[in-house]
Image (cartoon, rainbow, N blue to C red; front, top):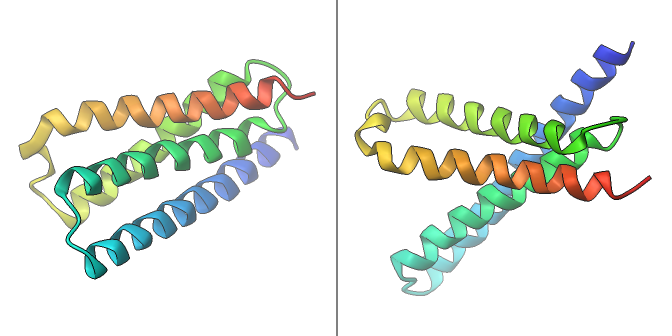
Length: 124
């Protein structure tokens, strides 16, 4: 029972995390449509979407765990990143032409998930 409950938390969390990402990216797209937004602002918004989504995902997954919640958060961030990488590879087969962008995204996803798990670790 414990394993299936954890899997349900992972599925709920990933759906909610990608919903948060979609909302943030829609806001960025709207801002780009309405005004001439600099490329740095768009990149910052995408980074913000990664971190906040993984933060929320880490909180959701580690909420019902008993110990080492930050590790559950890291696992959540890694799961978010792997799904993001797979979808990017399917949609854009040339994803590995910009390898320098892959490592910071991994670090941001893992860090955001870990922070979400650490916030839940402080709660009883």
